Length: 80
Image (cartoon, rainbow, N blue to C red; front, side, top):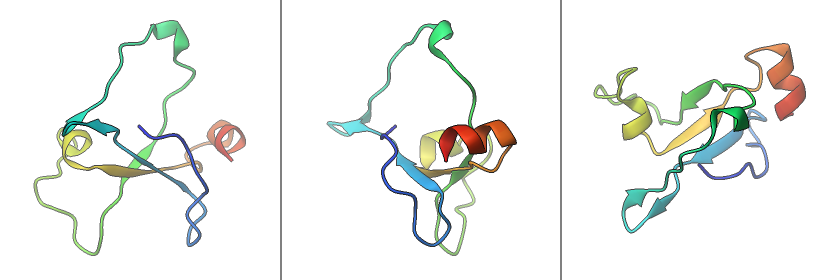
């Protein structure tokens, strides 16, 4: 995913997008000790959510997400 830029002006949350190269997503295998915490992502969509976006498929089908910094106190203090 892309690094954080400026928070979105209308809600103050960060938007991230999938990194792509030659039409394919970039991904890395990392050591589990490098994981600091999980995050809560909202799929970024317009007025209508696509029907095919199920909980098991949305990470593959959606290209941008909003990071929920209000999911818990630690997330808020870490992200904001």
